[in-house]
Image (tube, rainbow, N blue to C red; front, side, top):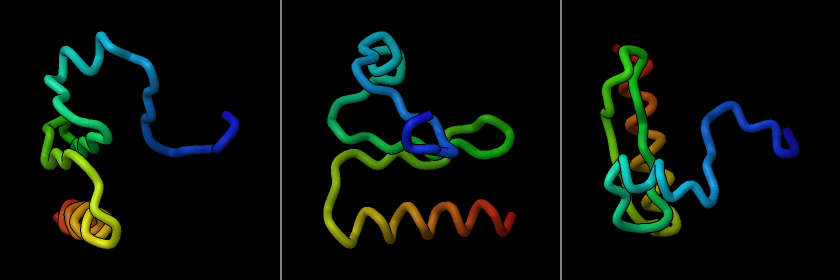
Length: 63
């Protein structure tokens, strides 16, 4: 992998976007260890989006 991501990244995958009902780009989906969608963040606001996603991940890791 070129960027060595440790999470799923999909580009030009209309079938996946349609099946997940993606309405905007970017869309971030955080899935817990049990496979349950725990957070969907649509769009990007510099500073805010990172904080929301980081808080969500920290909360899930603490569970």
